[in-house]
Length: 296
Ligand code: GRG
Image (tube, rainbow, N blue to C red):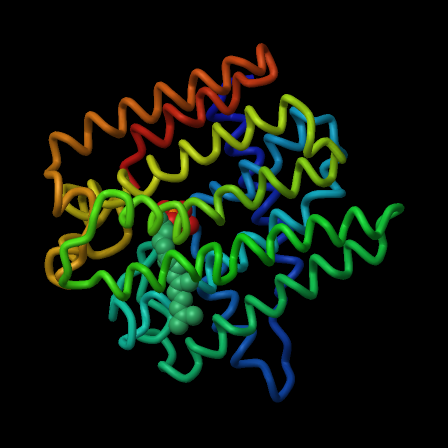
């Protein structure tokens, strides 16, 4: 099966599951469900859950075991985008090709929809953990997602981002910011799969973690490049925002040419890790190339 077909199949399954996990309700709370679904089902690339399904295949884990975690990670990602777009943070108007949540509804509803998606993610993961044959294994999977999305993970990176606005920061600080705000939620799926397979100490664990950590920094550098030279329509979000907001990024500090080179270098490094998995690493190898070439 081609990479594209497999990727699309993963995405279809993830979308079907997300659609079932957050349903419209005709009750007094109905507005919150409408806002949650508006942002969650707006057609993101679904990279994080795809990484989880791909790792599950590599580690021979049943898809049903990890699907709730894959969906939960996508919910956490969507909440972070809704909140990141708020006037108090990036004040963005366009996301995934449509109005941002606060523009479509209201600031209050966008704050609540983000909070609700975060809560829903933990509801979904804990329910699955309770139902698992080995609930402690489920708990360890849930714990990894909690850490990766928290103050030493995604939120940790975001606070460095906020503190760095308008300042000159070192390459080391910038890398720590990228590893946190973007890298950790990409790493969460790998850690969940490794916990599900109970193989955190195996050689494969080190390879997969090295792979995804490399991809994580590359992903944010690509994001910065697209903000600088990407096409708004293809991207589904406004461009040129980093300069407007006086953000410190790899592109604003080192320029486009250096970033393109760095991106190629990191992609080759990631491919090298994927190749260590032999035939099983084929999808991850092609995923690294897809992420290098992506236009949205
Ligand atoms: C809690 C007030 C409050 C704010 C939180 C946590 C947070 C805001 C922001 C996290 C940082 C963040 C949004 C990083 C951006 C990461 C990134 C590159 C997002 C784009 O991901 P894609 O390209 O998007 O996978 P799609 O739309 O395809 O899912």
